[in-house]
Length: 56
Image 1 (cartoon, one colour):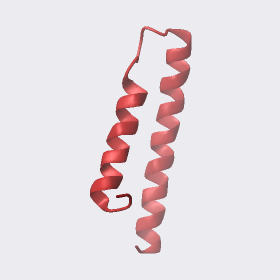
Image 2 (tube, rainbow, N blue to C red):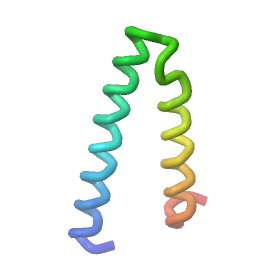
Image 3 (tube, rainbow, N blue to C red):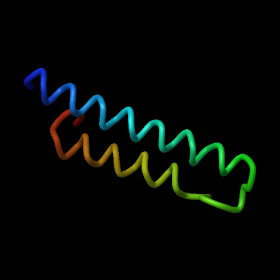
């Protein structure tokens, strides 16, 4: 993996993490909102890593 690709991937993951912080904050205030958002996103991320060949 090139440095540029790694940097882009790290920034993309950082953006995802920031989005999930907001999701968790909103959910902590209003538990009936965004009930499955975090779990679903984690599963999608794991699937993406699996398809990329990072985890097996």
